[in-house]
Length: 327
Picture 1 (cartoon, rainbow, N blue to C red):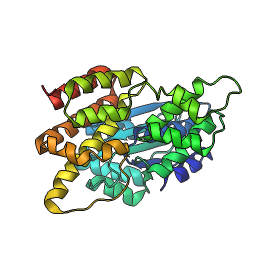
Picture 2: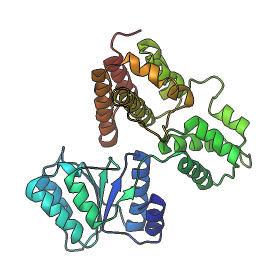
Picture 3: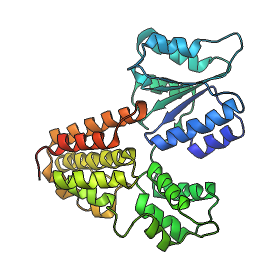
């Protein structure tokens, strides 16, 4: 099910007892959860619990979902990494999806849009998954338009295209950029392409493509300086993690395809200046370095979503581990 369809149903008050979100865009995941939360609880106090097999036993997770009280209170559960649930508890979770508890809403999140985990496949046979994968450019265009509408700001397509150029790597980044632009508007002031350039610091502030090129060239010193500059400008670490994950995944694909002659097509959410340099960058890294970078990014992504973390410390440590003593 596409996200728009699912959201329309939620906003009408049609809340399903179980949802399966498939796709790794953290902003879209949280956006959907917030919409469900708003419609599900309405004027009641929110009772939401995050469940993770790494922090709770399988038994504790299933007991939490199944537990009810005398007042039949509404409860919302968000379950990540469900594929780690094993044995009898795996069977119980599948059964729960068939016969959920009244007044409970369970949102299962699987970051892999085409998950191969047996448990996720079984659940997907019972309920249709909601697509929360990072959208292509055409869909990002619609999201940017939506964000301006939410701020009650009218814009034309040129403005939307400008924002897409600046922050078109993820929904999270686009939402953050639109918010910054709208906050700086005076009452009654309209948005123009020129003003976007001023508001985003397009002329002098460091751009993300410079940061990516520094990493591609294994220039540690420059990458650290640019990374810290981006964070100081309000770029969130999660946005950089998404870009870096795509960056290293594409380099890994290039290495594999050069040996197997596999061709790939489709939109790559990186700036054109970075995309055209990918073949050269991939020659600077070996398989072990790329795989290590992707593993570290996965760990950072997990920490961002589950616990407080210092963006600057996380990014700096990542750069030193990946680039080592280079440049």
